[in-house]
Image (cartoon, rainbow, N blue to C red):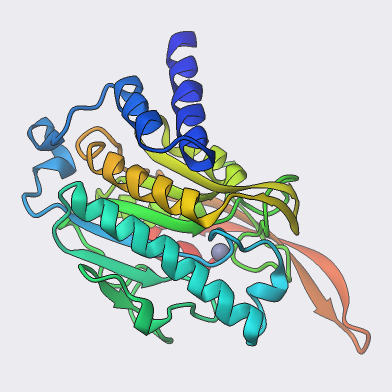
Length: 304
Ligand SMILES: [Zn+2]
């Protein structure tokens, strides 16, 4: 067990190094640490899906260069620029996935106010944006996909070094527990994909989001950090040239995890708890509310 843990930490360190400084050589090292083999198709599970379709879920808060809510909440020049940063991260990941052998790639705009900039779409993928989108939250995802990639993700609400950390709503400070385990957006998205047997193979965001990914998904989900949080709206930013290189290499590496990575599944019925702030009265004074209940269908997770 101890060895296994060291392996996870070592692998994480490699990817962090790759994101910050080193690049290709470090990620080749990570491949050896993970014990991955190129083309895991023969290992069964999702790896058997010949096409190697990949689903990418994106968010804005965990993109390179994004560190304050003024960039993510209100429309304006800062928001437009932040959206361009995200598109750059997505482009690097799409290039890496394709170089790693991905077939069809679907990219979903997961940011509340939507964050895609159409003229910056990297070729080789299809991009889903705009609201509302009837159906379940990961529109277009089904059993035919071989892996889930989460780009630009933030840590769950309340993480001290989580850049722009929140779970669903940053204003009402929502927190969620499923079967007793506090879960952020990473676990929520992976649980939805887990319903279809699709495993998380790559998570990108700040160091705290990457740490959360390793805790929930284990060593076979590659993580690439693009910044390190100091507090909720302060960060050590890594230069774009370095993060984009690390994202591309990380995505290539993640393709090798298909067949090794395990879907993240929540056992149903799910015992659920939610805490949030309710703003009431003429002064809109916040009051903390706790809701408890049972979720029978994983696909209805976000309706709780
Ligand atoms: Zn989010």
